[in-house]
Length: 233
Image (cartoon, rainbow, N blue to C red; front, top):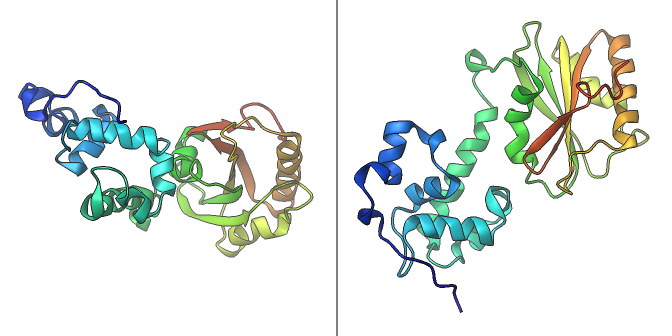
């Protein structure tokens, strides 16, 4: 039996408190995930307004990473969604994902580990397998590209360091930032992560390509091994 919750229509709210009006007044960053979904959904279902449908969708599908992983058909099968709304949700998520692939004149500049993590945190937190990526940077720390290097279980013995640097050498990058995810949701560095970092930084010195950081992404969070002094001599 579906849990009974207090029901109110969006139109029952003061106009200034409705999701679309709040977005127009305060910007999208001021809205919760459920409110942003409500704007895409537009209307609710009997007994639930659009915000409540958004809250239920987030709860039942393990928040935004779960919705990202879910297939179009899985979202269609959620109560009150259907093909049109599922298509809108998947399209909006994909547009957000593509923000990391920008035109050259709009390349972001990396000033901190948080800047680097922001480019991939949303997508990599949703991955069900470990994946290692490299951000290529020019001499002004502008992003030249993000390369996927490995997918699967990672360790210092499994990763070929030369392969990791190949895209940087090919594109004449001045520096790189290495990132990988922990599907467990815990970004705590393992001994293998630290050992791999040592190998990467040593190779970077030989190739004259600076390794600025190694970030671990998990559960929407990130840890910088450089900030923690792990693997960087």
